[in-house]
Length: 430
Image 1 (tube, rainbow, N blue to C red):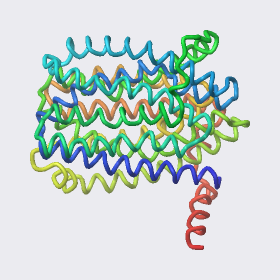
Image 2: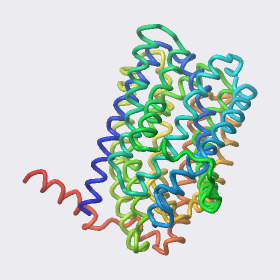
Image 3: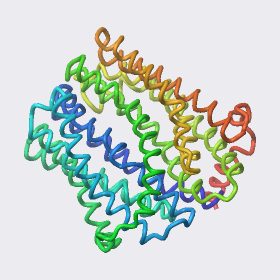
Image 4: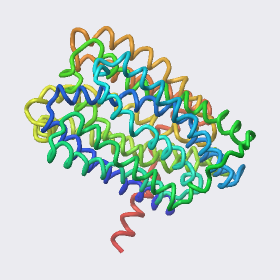
C-alpha cells in the first residue's frame, strides 16, 4: 500500500489546492456579485459543464484503459485523440450554443453565452489528454492539469471582477485562463502538437469511441443528476434562489474531494490491475475509511454551517445554510458511489453505474418539479438528497453483484482497515 498511499498524498495535495482556490473564487463572486448574479453565472456555466460529459466522449477513460493495458502505443493514442478532439470541439460548441440560447433564462445575452462557451474547446482538449497520464500512472502531471486552472481562475477573478469591475462578464472571462494555459502547455511541453495528423487510424479511433461513448453516456447521466436541479431552478424559480442553491451545494460538494482523491488513484490502478478481485477488496477498504472521514466532516459542517456560510459569503447568502444542511446526508451516502464506481470504470465496465443513476435521476427530476415551485432552493436540495441516497444504495447492490463481494463484507469494518493510516503516522514520527 506504500506506493498507493504516496499517490493518495499527491492527489490530496492537489485537491487541497483546488479546494483553497475554489473556495477563494466562490467567496469573491459571492461578495462582489451577490446571490442573483451568482445565479446567472451558475445558469450559464451549467450547460458547458454538463456538455463536457457528452463532448468528451469518455476519451480520457478509454485512453487510460487502452494505454494502461498496453493495447495501443502512446503515440498512436495521442494522434487519435487529437483527431477526435478537432471534430468534437466544433459539434460541442454548436449544440451547446443552441441549448444555452433556447433553454437558459440568461441565454438572451449573447456576450455572456460566448464567454461561457469559450473554455469548452480547451477543457475538452485537456480532458482528452489527461487520460495519457492516468494510463501511465503519472499522477504528478495529472495533478498539475487539475490544480493550475483553479489558481489561474482565482487570479482572473481578482483582475476582472475586483480590479476592473467587469461584473458577470469578468467572472466568465476568468474561467477561460486556466483551461487555455494548460492546453498550450500540453501542446508544446508534452509534444501533443506533433500528434496532429490527417492520416487516420480508424481501427484505434473506432475502438476508443466504442468504449468511450459508453463512458460518456454513463458520465452524462451522472452529471445530469448533479445538474438537473440547477436547470429546473433556472426555469421554475428565480436567479436569487439559484444563487442561494449554488453556494450551499458548492460547499457540500467539497466533501467529495475525499473520495475524489481515492477515485483518481483507484481508476488508474484498476486499469492496470492483474488481480481484479483483490483490487476490489482494497477498494472496499478505502470506502470504509473514506466513509468515516466524510461522515465526521459532514457532522462538523452541519454544526458550523451558519458561521461558515455567513462568514465566507455574507448575510445575503444566509438561506444557503439550509441548503447545505439538507444536502449533507445525501452527500455522505453517495460517497459509496464516488469511491467504488472508478473501480468498475477502470475495469472497462462504466455502464454498471447507470443501473443506479438512471432511477436516481428520474426521482430527482420528479421531486424537483414537485418541490421547487413551493420551496425553491430548499426543495431542490431535498430532491438531490433523496436522489443521492437512492443512487448510493443501488450502486452498492450492483457493485456487490458485479465483484461477487457480499455487501456485508464490503461494509464490515476490520482492525486491519486502519493499518495503512497507522503505518503512515509511524513513518511521519520517524
